[in-house]
Length: 104
Image (cartoon, rainbow, N blue to C red; front, side, top):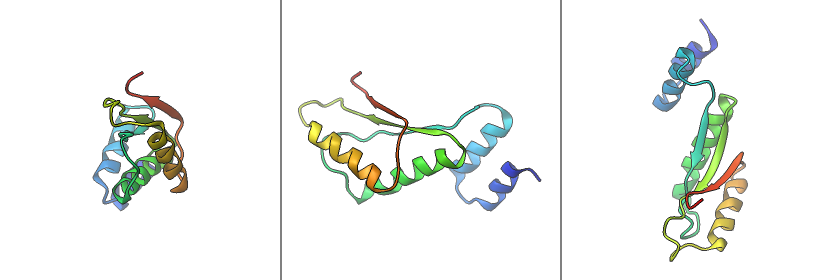
């Protein structure tokens, strides 16, 4: 049994199983994920799980993760929130490759 099939049988994560299938079938060559927070407030516990899942998924498949701020409401957004979210992602032990803003 190949490694991808072995990972699939041991995984109960349907997203991981889709990634395994897509890589095995050649539909994708690389795993690229993104975390898209809105910089209109500080991170909360509800952000921790998706940050960890998204970045760990990319890491497991030797992919990369982008941090792309969904800054489409400039009235409520501030650099203070962007910096705070970046610090929180790093505090969780995660990192990103690309840093983007939707407004770009």
